[in-house]
Amino acid sequence: MTLITLIADDYAITAGVSRSILRLLEHGRISGTGVMTNRPHWKGWSHALRGFHGKADLGVHLNLTLGAPLTNMPLFAASGRFSAVGEIAKGALALRLPVDEIAGEIEAQLDAFEQAMDHRPDFIDGHQHVHGLPGVRKALFSVLSRRYAKGSKPWLRDPSDSLARIVKRGRNMQKALAVGGLTSGFAASARKAAFLTNDGFAGFSAFDPKSDYSVDFASYLKATGSRHHVMCHPGEVDEELGRIDPVVATRPQELAFLLADLSTAMLQNAGCELSRLRPLAS
Image (cartoon, rainbow, N blue to C red; front, side, top):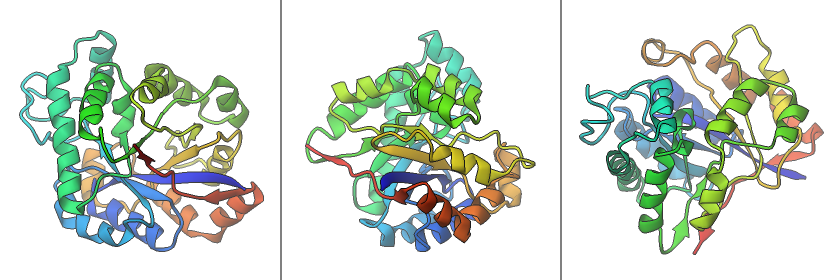
């Protein structure tokens, strides 16, 4: 069997998304979830995750593109709100991101997780893959190398994959290649800092409500790596989600598919089994 780590992004973005992810965890349909600890919902919904500690991968979905930061960021978020990911990517490629401010915010988001959960995150990734961008990456590894120098190390999501694997899957290739290009070298940086990453990454979607998510999901199970990781974005839609996030219409489709027996059958037919990706012990 090929072991697959299936992670639901965006826990705590809204109540509806959080409630949906809890359903999937309770039914054993996902391997874990990444939480957005700067969102106002985190404190209220954090207690519900405590029962899954040790049973699922519970990580921090670092957020630098939605809502307000937990820290004062006069350069990175001068208005008191984060900028869109496109603006941050431009700053990253121009090497003009305020690394110290970003490091402080990463620290605060990790603190918020550990204070609520009483344990380290099992993994760390980023909303819209922002953690892999130049500048952000530098801040991330400066924090992680100091913070987790001893004891269990979280695993890190590498949002890139090889060209051959992306082509073999044959779905949403442009998005996968674009993200891979922006975050190229992340796995090498992680290895240098002695952190484990996934090997193989899928889950890209056009977020088109007219598309068939089951077709996308089938492609995610092709050309798997040795530590294959698949992201997903399930959720119930509420008024708040429609105001703050562009991914709305397809979330209920992903939720329905993952709750249905078809998702389990598809995994079995592809010779795949859900698993956790264990953190590294130093």
